[in-house]
Each structure stands twice: as C-alpha cells, then as structure tokens.
Image 1 (tube, rainbow, N blue to C red):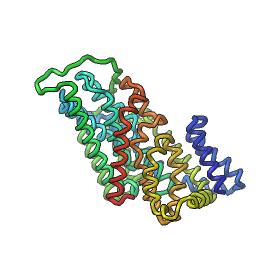
Image 2: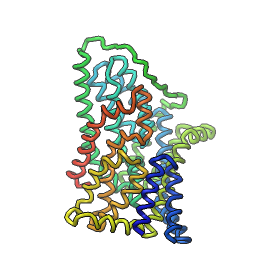
Image 3: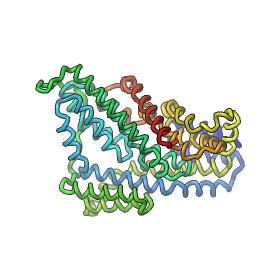
Image 4: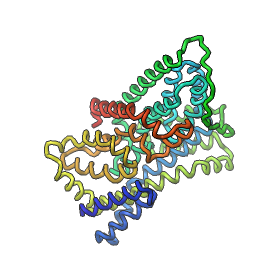
Length: 429
C-alpha cells in the first residue's frame, strides 16, 4: 500500500507540474485510478464523501471571503488608503519604499496575490517612474509583505494545508501571527534599506526636483464605476466587526464570512441587478477555489481512508534516524524553501505535507506544527515560476521574470529564515 501511495503522489505531482492535467482533474482522477488498482472498489465512495465533508467548511469560507473582499475592492474601501499613502510618499525614495511595503501588506488581506499586485502596481508604479526608482523594488516589497499576510485563514497556503491535514485553519493561523509580524518587521527593514539606497543613487535632496522620464511601462487603470466613496466608513466598520467576530469566536469562521458578505453586498449594491453583476464579476475566482478544495477532499479522503498515508509514513520513518525524528517540524520548515520553489503549492501541500505530518506523528510531533512549518517557505515560493502573480507583476513592470527572481531571491530567502526563526522563538513549531 505504501508503494501505491507513493506512486499516486508522484503521478499527481508529475501531471500537474508538467501541465498535462489541471490540479482539479488530477486531484480527482489520480486517486480514483490508483484506488481501483489497489482494489478499493466501492469503498472509495465513503472515503471520498468523508474527505469532502472535512474540507467543506474551508471551501465555504474561501468562496465567500473571495467574494467579500472583491466587493470591498469594487466599492473603493481601500481608495482613501491608497491616496493617503501616495500623498505621504511624495518624491522621497525612502518614503515611497516604505509606502509600497505598507500598501502591499494592507491590500493582501483578500488572500489573492494577483489582485494585490494589480492594486499596488497601479498605485505605486507611476510614482516610481516619475522619479526614476527601480520598479523591481515594488515586486520585492510586495513579495515580502504579501507572503506574511497570506497566512490568513482564507489565504491559499493555510487553506490548502488545513484541507490536506484536516486541521482547523484558525489553529494554524493564530500560532503563526507573531512570526509573521516579525517577518513584516524584516520587510520594513528591507524597504528602509532600499529607500536609503535609492536616495543615494538618485542624489535625492529635500528641495530637488526628482521628476524623471517615463520608461514606457504599461500601467493599468482601475475601474471606479462601482466605487461607493460615501460608504467607506460603513464598510470599514463592517470589516472591523468581522475581524472582532473572528477574534472572539462568536460564531464559526465560515458563518462570520457568509453573513459579512451578505451585509456588504446589500449595503453597497442594494439593487438586484447590481448584486448579480458583482457576484458574476468574481464568480470565476470563487468557483475555481471551491472546486480545488473539494477536489483536494477527494484526494486526501482516498489517501487517508485507504491507509496509504499511514503506510507511506511508516516507510518514510524507516529511513529517518531515530535521533532526527523529533525534529520533523524544523526539517519540514527548512525543506519548505526548495520544495515550494520547485513544486507547486497543490503538489506540495496535498502530496508531500501529509506524508511529513504522518511521519512526524510517529515520533509524537503534533500535525499542527508540521502544518505551520510547511508554510514558512512561502516567501521563496512567491518567486516560483509555477505561479501566476510573478508573471502578472513582471508584465506590469515590463521586466523579465528571471530578472525579478535574481533581484529578489536573496531577500526572499532571508524572509523565510526570519519567518522560521520567529516560529521557533514563539513556539509555533
């Protein structure tokens, strides 16, 4: 059974990394085919249903979180913040770099890296071009801030690892908050250093005219037809109320998200036609995420219910020296840097992490520690050629992806090491 399980994981990873199949199709068909080969037959139905039941709350939360934050962006909740930050930045490279980092963090709470890229680049790139700053700084600071904020419960890594290991997303998230805050301090330090470096390179002086020639990068425009500037304070209080409900545990997280979404839609777009249009505008992203999570339930349901993951972990444990077994969490943390760069998040969290967690359990390591450790390489993952945002930001900045990777790789590794150190120091792993 162990060899069948390893074969299933390797086949799944190969198919999605070579782009022969989408992650959704591979997550469903690969375990079904291997399950039939293992002689599971009709028993797979119960395994699949059990796996999908376990991930249903996560899927519900993600769907409504995506719709909620998309509606808030449409309504212009972040427009005052963007205007204030760009006004604060002025023509000072140091202030501009700090403003980029702050805006990147503030707009990362939707859990979607692509939308964060669009918002921050739209706001900051014209400023960079006007005074001649290196646009790659935007990419680096986006990477450093977004990956720390993206540990939120509806963020991609947290949702995936919670689905794969059947853990509570809030347990994973809360434990990593102090380490992520340390990572944001690191990002601020990098922004400060880059800003000072650009000051020196450009010869900045308080009264000097810093205007430079536009380099021709394509800056997208924001569609403001759906913005509701008069409702900014109402929307802000609504989001703060949601955060308070999440923190106090007054209701399960999916319930909080669903109710907040309904209120946001009604407040900002009371007409039925407007509501349908806003939901339709963002339905593709929501449906894509939901199908991915439920498909993961199929994969993990068969992997776990068949006993494959237990057999695989025992085989994995057999090759680990006994003295190293209790250190599975730090091993996972450091291994996450190369794994998440060369392997997609789907392949990593659904294929590799369950094996590491089950192997760690053999030595008494809590799966929650493995889950948190598996997320600590996300700053390096943000530079992976397997994800979409890096191509989006490369195109918007008119820079090659390879150039972006060379500029940002060492600071990204530094961010992951700070993240790991923070997790150690705070007891997250």
